[in-house]
Amino acid sequence: MLEKDIKKVLYSNEEIVKRSEELGKQITEDYTGKNVLTVALLRGAVPFLAELIKHIDLDIQYDFMDVSSYDGTNSSGDIKIIKDLDTSVKGLDILLVEDIVDTGRTLLAVKQLLMNKGASSVRIVTLLDKPSRRVVDVQADYIGFTVANEFVVGFGMDFNQHYRALPYIGVLKDEC
Image (cartoon, rainbow, N blue to C red; front, side, top):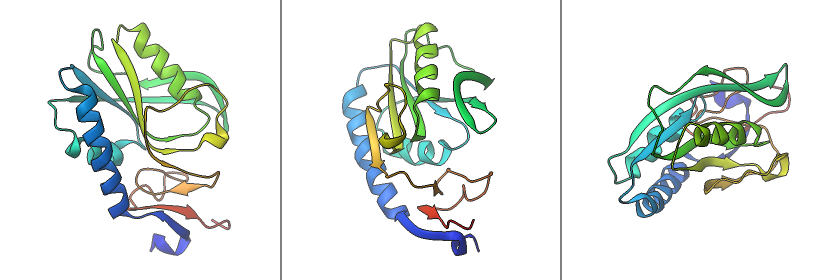
């Protein structure tokens, strides 16, 4: 039903799973012997987190934050915490899980916030990176796929809360 609104599929579910396996293997190597907390940003990162943690061979914890940095339709860079972590980050190595890095404003603010709360380190893993839209100096440490400046939906990413449950990442038709 929702497929009729998709112009093209960028990454199939199989490609996302395969890339998540590769990222999970690298994260396992990099974090072995560390006390890791994955922090997913709600809501978009949830499907990616669920897939990614299947492939990380460590005893990791996970928690969630819900933050907003939008004033109307423009990203302001000032974050509003809607749901904070239930876990203390003091002394932990944080792996911040995001669906897409766009302007980078929210991620930079959250990264700084977690460091201020006493995290030992904060690294970022993102399913998608859209460097052409970056307005602040923040880079993901682990990137699933780099995408052009197109409006993408699926696998957690939405348009007005729709299309999140698509099992792939696609580009929305212009008329939608």
